[in-house]
Length: 257
Image (cartoon, rainbow, N blue to C red; front, top):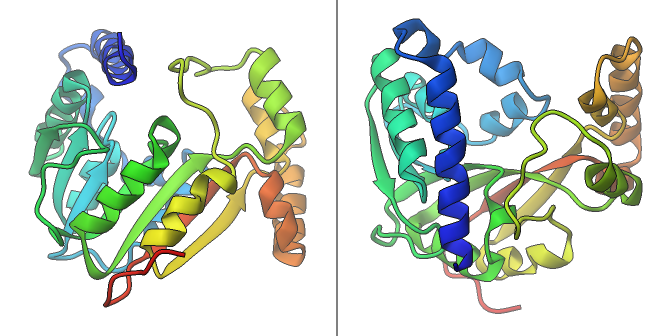
């Protein structure tokens, strides 16, 4: 079984389990936008980097459960939700109906997008790039993004050896992974620099990732400390649990570097 088929089957199983858990009650499929924006510390600032969305064509690249697609549509974007898993797309459509928004769903390989060049003004991706072959994905994202557009990705980061050991050996909620996915590193991001005029990274959860292991009374203090450290010492962003990657496409093609 090839990598893409393994990914598809894994995420279809994830969607089926969630559909069974949520059942047929419409309220269970409603999206509380504020709760979504706060469910991880990087979500709100990352979405803000997309800029104003009213009337803009936005691709939710690897839409998963569809919550981001619903929020983007509520904010006035014309949203296309793409995923390799039919189960996720069915979930996204169900959430769209429950929240009275319209999204267009497309099942496709994220490394071979079925869209015309320049089809989107903004692209959003949450926990998607680390599943992919970055060279192919970067080329496709750049192709379908119009000149002057922006792509924002939130991704698990692999720059902290202690965190990598925790990921490997410690139990925590939501640890299920596909066989080929692994956190990103600066080396793996090199293709992005070949296709975008500007690429910036910002780290999140330098210390507060330990909250993933269970209740921690001092979590608020850790968050305050990490915010101060990351603001004062930018090199520590490389030691964070997650990064937000902002890619801006210039008006002209980027030459190979």
